[in-house]
Image 1: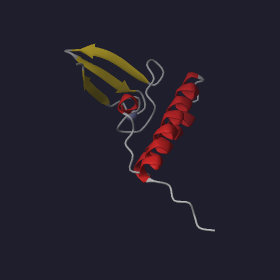
Image 2: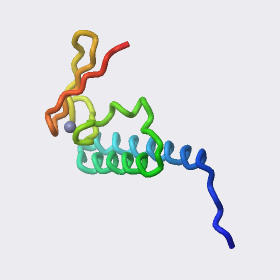
Image 3: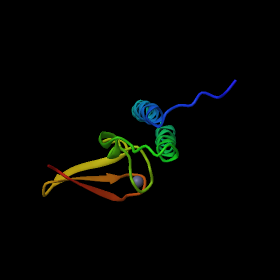
Image 4: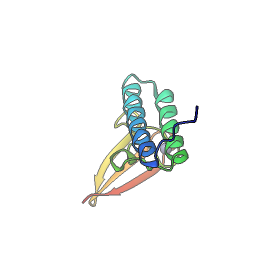
Length: 103
Ligand SMILES: [Zn+2]
């Protein structure tokens, strides 16, 4: 019996779905104050996106720290301020600042 081939587009769709479920799991874990497990989910989602060459969706891209890959949740893992038309996020884990322009 030959192995069934899955098209590249199908792989992309499955990967996007998995990334979204991993991010929602990470959010629920952060709310339960289990930050280390949430960070593991983010690293897993990132590895999935790199392995299958499928980008992390734009709305989820700013939900994790781009320096240490920890999940950013206001007041629990990061601080959010708005200044000069930019969103400023400070990660509590690595203390680095990310600035996102407001449109
Ligand atoms: Zn960080």
